[in-house]
Image (cartoon, rainbow, N blue to C red; front, side, top):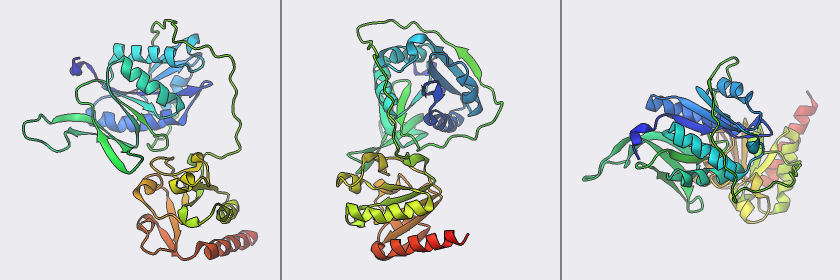
Length: 347
């Protein structure tokens, strides 16, 4: 493998039902940062059927080039045809970096493609940057520059690992949704559009889709919430989450939680904030009965305003909070909820 042949930063622009997923725009934003450090450009690769119009939107969100792979066999996601198409793109265009969202689709597609093109993949990354590998120069070992340093939680979120792929290309990573910042949309911004039609060969790995059942859920995605009222082990009991529900209702917010709450079976995994949960950026984040371990704060520290309520004045959560209240949440939350109700009633 000649590493010098590989140039550029590419992202897999996920679409479902011909609508681009938010992760596509987040990946373009991060890809621009990486490309600036490498002095190269950003390519978005979109797969599907009848998807030509999506190129304009990808251009408006910052893609320099858009590779459109439009084929009826790609109408609905299936591992084998998508893997054939994306692997063919990599072998033909040779991007130095290939980023895929760590969504249900990306977690399936990313490792399949990396195996096809004989490179490594770092899964569920929360940070990406260009740097040196090894991180610290070692006597007798070449330190390579301009490497993609991929950071992800390891050992159940108890430590952070930074991984590089210095000897193979492309450098591939799946990236956790909600972690990277998308660029501002610029109406009318155009990307160079490349229509690419790789051969997709049906084989015994193809599956037949008999029916698609769309799940309808009343649960709000915490990644989209503007106000989050989050509870930890310090809430005490699952019944005490009623206090958080009441506060969230008054504020028009959504309840979320820490990993300890999910592990205890009090709340579902979809509501978990943190390295092993979801990364959120609400306007206001209430951390109630949450100690503030790094595994949790990594998922919410980019919130605009953080308000912590904890009876332990030494809790690490106060180090990242903008406002802190030391006291019993069983007394504070009802009083705060009633005060907000009264304030809103007077407006």
